[in-house]
Length: 423
Image (tube, rainbow, N blue to C red; front, top):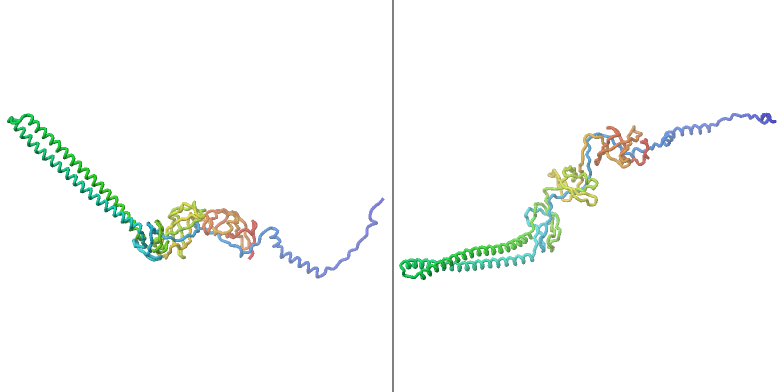
């Protein structure tokens, strides 16, 4: 039986060792390094990113009037810049050079068309022939009328003779000088003369109506041909192409002495008295466009205003083309197709909280922002946004006037609730 382990125990005597100076210095250095690294270790432990201040963009929340607008570009075009066309085939001679000033009605080009000249001569010859035919018909009608009037005169004379014979027969029958048969014969002769006279009068009246109708018909034929000749002469006169407005010649669209076909554009004339802005607006804003919207434009370093006067009904290349008038042009020296920048104002809000636009909108979809607590840190806060403009965005909630928020990209923040800002 084992009573205990006392017999197996052995007492150990410990001896004190002296700590060397080198060990003390090492321990002190380790403590100092730990103290220096403690804030960094703490930030790492808490996952707080440290961001260089030079890489950040900051902006202060302010209160003011916010205009929802869009920045677009475009060009200056003359409100009235008609193209001149050749209406007939032929050879074109230009009288005005590009950049030359012209007055309204001034002849700037002429088209030589031998075919049209020959056609005019043919139609004029036909017109003269129709006039001769009309004159000949008028003479024939007068001759026919003269014959009918001669017959009418003969009938009238015969009527007179029959009347006198009847009177003598009446006197003779009373004296019983002639027989009743002879008296009846005189009466029949008078009746026949009356009928012939009546018929002759009707024939003359009818002939006169027919002559009037035929004369009018011949006149209409001549007038019709005259219209044809006048139209051809008008076309010939249009070969002398006149400037429809006062201005300058823009461009020649063909070369000097070129032969052209009908409806071929020849040149443009630019009216410099009134300009319009031709703007290209992204189709994203197509539904917001409307007649009368205000447009702020910058042309050759000068600011001018205008308003939308026309909107294209179609979209080309993702753009909607609109036209705006240009006000206060007196102090401007403009050129056709001169480039410009513009802003179209869609909506305006008064007295709203707003901050400059930045990449933080795309980083957070406009739902969060980092607000500065002090110079060395910023915290994440929820926000809600409203109206957008080219430079500013409306902040509906989450901030107050005077707050400073970071408006640069949040990609390196790793959605941290807090960041440290290093100088």
